[in-house]
Length: 87
Ligand code: SF4
Image 1: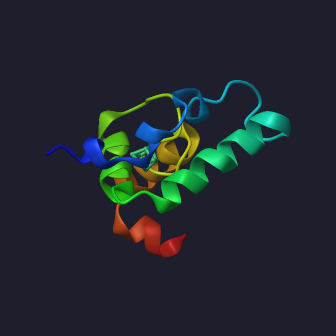
Image 2: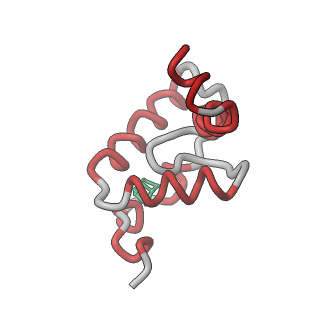
Image 3: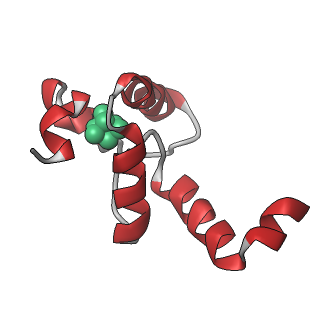
């Protein structure tokens, strides 16, 4: 069985995970919070986040993160453990 088969987002409107607009305010920010709340309850959140980080830039909320948040995680990983300890 694939991890996607047990993902909670299968039971949600897919549009919830693909917000459009300014992600920092208004309805879009609320939508992102709602999508992340689903991810927090999801049994495969770690696998999903790992997939999304490895996949490179992908639109939408995956593993409880936005693409911008995943970009920051990728950069931190590329800089290595020393940079993470200094942060
Ligand atoms: S962590 Fe979020 S996006 Fe990933 S499978 Fe679960 S509900 Fe879907």
